[in-house]
Length: 122
Image (cartoon, rainbow, N blue to C red; front, side, top):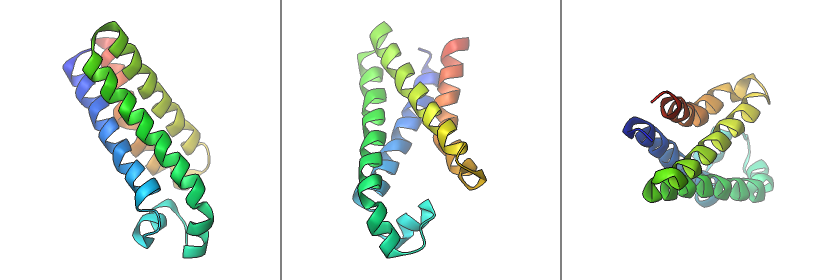
């Protein structure tokens, strides 16, 4: 996997660690749950178990990318590609849920998509 693809995948992993933090560690902070379109603490409390679970999904994808980058070779490349494809797929699902989710979907999906394209071209 080319270095630029590895860097892009690493950026995607880092972003997903931050998302994990927001969804699983800092969810009760109004500045966090408001970023996800919620309007009250009560709504955030109801959504907390879902956000907590989703945060770990993001963390596991980030860990997968990190492990793949460390392992290297064909096996590592396969792990990184799988995780990047999963993130891009999740971004597409997010974008399909409505126009207000297009920006977060782009933020989530652009770096792993660029990593995949770069890996395929080079």
